[in-house]
Image (tube, rainbow, N blue to C red):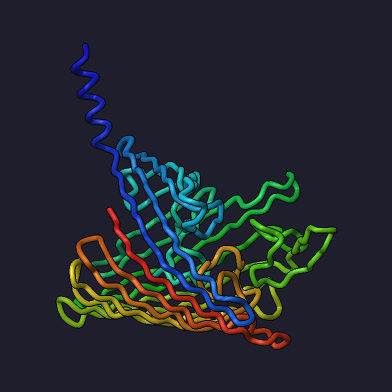
Length: 360
């Protein structure tokens, strides 16, 4: 009686795949009119993907940090105190065998939309939204694929008449016109339901660069959105193979918020050079972006560029050196300007991040 149970248990565990990463960061932030901020930080993430059967799987993920939706970093402070671990992922994935390329997710999930090489103009890489999503990829020919993505994300629970959602869709294609060149292009629409006149998402005591009405009630400050957010995005990625060890990538991203009459656009362009793989590999990258105040929801885009949010412009520069397989030394430097409205004076913002990272 015992042997079948043991065999069944072993078979179950063989269907669970664990992966994660650990990162140790030294960071310096210099902002005009403020003192320098020098800190040490860590990040740890662990994800378990479980295959339930041929059509269903489930994922659970844990991550360090606070409840911040766009950061899993944890400051090293507090006299060796224990650090917080949070639920980062919890979703099920239905992928019927009879419809190849279709995935339907429900829960707190990995980000389901294509992004411009994770440059975070619209969405931070650490964001794990909550709701329902559908992704579909279909081979349209020998060298082309098409993709369609759609989602409905539940953001806040106010009351039945004032709950806030994000619904969005995206479509695009990837094509390889030659052995050395490939292209990905896509367009998306993201509509945030009920923002105007409502408190700003996650932490309403901050405006994250978005235009807002400030209301002070004693010691409490609350910012309210003054407009709607209907974001249209166009993105593209061009890859070129120079030789069997050298690769180039060019990236572009453009966003317009049709829900705002002004200060409603953002754009990014950049490139990267990759040489080699694993030990001794090298990656150099650079991108420039400008984000007007109401182009995107500020709390959900990059938490590093201008310190997070919108209403800024500038460069992101970096390099990554492979020390061994899945182990790297990374340096990122942000040279930015905060406050690009005509009514504001621009402030310098500089950020240096030095990372040691191991993935498994």
